Image (cartoon, each protein chain N blue to C red):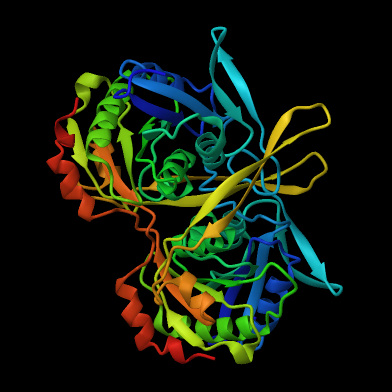
Length: 260
Length: 260
C-alpha cells in the first residue's frame, strides 16, 4: 500500500461516484498519494449533513475501465465517509477530500452542501478535510482545480488543521490564465431568493418545485462569494463549533435562567 | 386571525406532523399565540439541513380530531419551513418553533439534527427561531417542555435574536419537580462512537446499519450535554456563521495565496 511517507487520501463527493469532477481529482491526487474512493452511488446535492439511520446502507464495488475504482454507497456523503473510515478502509486516511463539485459552495450554500458535508464528517472523525468546488454546472475543465487541491492537500498534511475546522475551496470556472490568484476568505452572507414553481400533476393535484437564485449581497473582497466573482480561488476555514459566544451573557440578562 | 399584538408562530419538527411532541407544543402555544403547523409528513430524523431539489414537493392538508391542523409536507424539515414561509402562509410568522423533539440535540448531534434544521431555516429566512428537544426516546410527558418553550418564545419575541442566531433548547426528561433550573450553555464537544452492524440479506448480500452511542467527553457544567445530565434545562445560542476567524491569518502564513 505505498511507502510509509506517502499520503493516504479518502476521496468522496455529493455528485456521485461516477461524476467527472471526482475522477479528475482522483487522477491528480494519485500522482503523489494513495487514494481510496468511497462516494454516494448517485447525485446527493443539497442533502446537508444528513445521515441514514432508518434504512440499511449498502456499499457496492464500483469499476471504471474494468478496474476496481472504489465503493458506491447507497446513502449520503456523510454516510459514505463514516462507512469508509469505520468499516471499509484498512487504515484511517491522512486526509479526506470531497469533490470536485459541479457548482460553487459559498455563503449560505455551505449550509446545504453535500460536498462540504463529506468534509465535515471527515473533520468530525478527526481527519483533516478539504471540500473543493468548481463554479459551474456545465461542461467543465477540472484540471486546474484538481492541481490546486493536490497542492493544498500537501500543505494541510504538513501543517494539520485545528480540531473542528475544515477548508472549503471554490475555484472560478474560467480558463486558468484568467484566474487572478488565491484569497483566504470568510463565508459570505448572501442568501437565496427562494421561489416555488407551482404546478399541477395529470390528476390536477398541486405540487411545488423549489427554485430561485442567489441574491448576492456580499461586497467585501475577503468573502468567498466576491472572491470567486473576481476570479480568485477562495479558501475558507470553516468550523462546526456553532455557539454564539457573545450571546451567552445577553441571554442571562434576559432572565432566561429564571424561567420555569 | 387574532389581534395585531398576538404572536403568530409557525411550528414544525422532524418527527413528523403527527408526533405527540409537536401536538403538545402547539396546544400550549395556542394559549397565547396564533399557531400555524407545517411539518414533514413522516419521521425525518438525522436529515441535517437537507433540502429537496431533485424531486417535487407536495403539501397536503392534515386533519386532527376532524379539524384542519396544518400542512404535511413530503420533504425535509427545511423544506417544510421554506414552503410555509414562501408559499403556504398568508403572512410571515413572528417566530418559528421546532419540536418538541423526542431525544436530545446536544453537542455533535446538532450537526445532524432535523429539529435544529427547521429552526435554522427559519433563521435563514430572517425569523427568530427556537428548537426544542426532550431528552428521551420513550413515552414522554411534554408538558413542562412545552410551557418552558412558550415562555421563552415570548422572551425572544420581546428581545429579538441577532441575525443568524437561533436558540437550541434541551429539556431533561425527568419529573418537573426534579428539574434543578435553567442554564445558558455552549455546544458540547462530545461525539459519537459510530459502529456499523454488518448483516446479510436473504440473498447473502452484505448490508450495514449505522449504530453506536454518544461518547460523553464533556465535563464543563456550562455545556449543553452536562447541563441536561445534571437535570438543568439547557438553552444554547447557535449560529451558522461558520468561518474560523482565527484561522485566516494562519492560512496566509502557510503561503496558501501563492499556490498555483
